[in-house]
Image 1: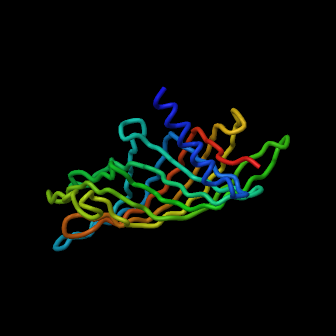
Image 2: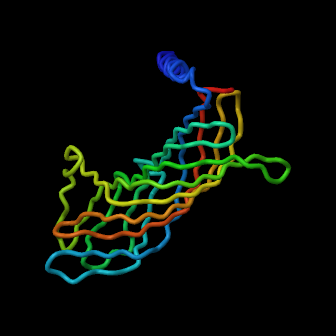
Image 3: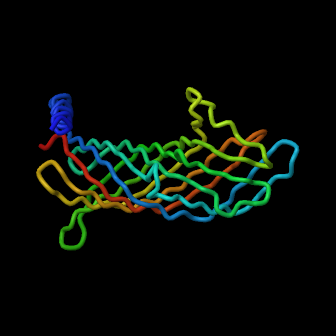
Length: 223
């Protein structure tokens, strides 16, 4: 009962904050899974030859910490601005002999700002198209030539680095449950370029993936 009361108080507070705004605000939380592409990766370490290969990454989306996406949206008519954080994980599968392990398991996080548009197609079904860009905040864990990266660095010694940029497109379908709650199903595609630190060097990583996400949304304001 206490948890329900806290959730109710939170939602009521948000409604009061945005009560004077003519726009419609929404919040969504999703789970899902990615399908990663094999793309070039370059590892440069002082005093050693450069390593170049096509990296294959696993994501293990259903193991803790799981894959997730959270999003705030501000709608006006059929258009919206969206602020989104996607938590990905990367585990290098095809490691060259020089690399003992190369993971971004505490977050290959993509922070995105997108523009969304509602449109109708077959039988007047409404869909949402989105396009946006942002930054990659990555938590590197790796050992190259037996030199293990210190994970307690940057951002209050938490090991996170702003290392790259990303672009994203998506197609979504919302299914109403009540006048405020709805389900959101979405297919996403994004491409990013990130510089990941290693001891005495860095790894330049291209990454692309399709993501399939499904989650619950809540509308704070309805016109």
